[in-house]
Image 1 (cartoon, one colour):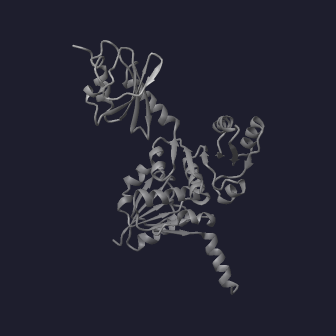
Image 2 (cartoon, rainbow over the protein chains, first blue to last red):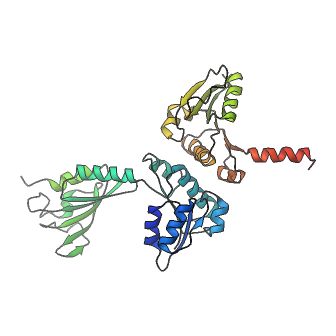
Image 3 (tube, rainbow over the protein chains, first blue to last red):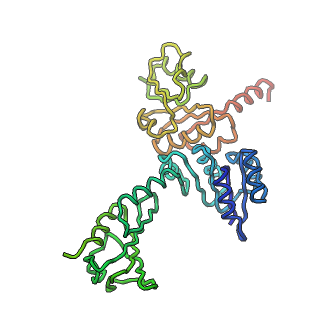
Amino acid sequence: MRIVIADGLHEADYLIGLFNTKGNSLIVINRDEQACRYLSERNNIPVIHRSPVREGNLLAAGAKDADLFIALSQSDVRNYVACKTAKQLLKVKRCIATVVNPKNVSLLKKLGVDAVFCATHLLGEQIHTSASLDSFINSLSLEDNKIQILELRIKETHEVCGKALEQLNLSGLASVSCIYRQDHGIIPNGKTVLQDDDKVLLVTTTESRERVTALFRRKRA
Amino acid sequence: MNGNVIIIGAGRVGSSIASLLNEKNYSVTVIDKNKDALMDVDDFSGYFEVADASDVEVLQRVGTDAADAVVISTEDDDTNIFLTDICHFMFGVPRIFVRLADSRKEKLCRYPSVRAICPFLLSLDEFRREFGE
């Protein structure tokens, strides 16, 4: 993959370390001279000292038709314009922006940035998730918190234990993707019966999460 | 009233346009981060919001969805491009005027409802006319 890393300091350093592997070609461009020196010395790669919000600079850096563009500056506006320039004028396939203001996560996505990350937004989601679920559930949010992947542990005391999936009436609520049982993954069907100590991996929507978790945690009468 | 116009950025250009449209009986709303931005405009009877217009909630609050036109004239081209896209895609503003110091960025604002105004190109045109080109 040809990856462009635009601006940023420690975030850029981390991503360079992550992506600077065989099979990837990195283009690192940064408006800050000190950051260029720091990134170049630490990673032993050339860093282009130019502003990434200018089409000419990105063209000269070889960013045209790149596979991935990651904008890491501290300015949400700059990151948006850098992604827009890369996508619209240089035909970069996928653009990712980091933002400081959590409200800009959904805004930039609506304006066409493929993926947007905000540390505060992620932290908020994580706190919300851990506060609302008890310890027997792990969860992962996708697509701007609209889709949830839940991992639920089945106990003998749960009402669902010993029942087949088709008896749970999950239709329209959730889809059980996989069951982890005694060191093996099982792709279930409607006849699959839940057993004590199963780990159930299911996909649901954020609106249905509470209903689904309530169903799975209900104790036997 | 001739229509609702929102002016974002009240530097010399923005505040002069605000004054002009105010005189011509437009309903004018000005947004600027600097509370003293309109100090030099006499008899301004429009609405002045001291805020950061790149916050979409500010644009909602001042009624951008009902604006007939928006004039975007902050000192920063990237902010102007960002605001143009918000006004175009999020609020569907029918007429948007955006000032760009760097005329090379004009191609990022090519939508039917957007007119980019580049002082550099206007100056160049003036010189061309002056020298008979």
